[in-house]
Amino acid sequence: MAALAPVIVPERADSADAGALIAELEHELEPAYPESSRHGYSIEKLLREAVAFFVTRHGGISAAAVAFNSLAPSTEKSSACTYGPDFAARVWAD
Picture: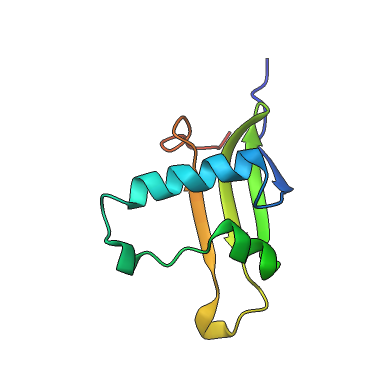
């Protein structure tokens, strides 16, 4: 049986899957960086600024998320990527 390919889909940042992935990223960053060094957008800001947000699913399970603000000035582009706890070390290649 062939492995299922990951699927990348646009998603609202306030969906349950996106929120879980964002929370996982915050959980990973919190012990490593002081709050003053973490510049991630809140879910409200992601929605307000219409940031493109995508979730990758593998076998129907939320595996990763990425956000990109293409309308921000080039010096303020916002991009982030986070992986769910079960997918952090997985390499997706055939």
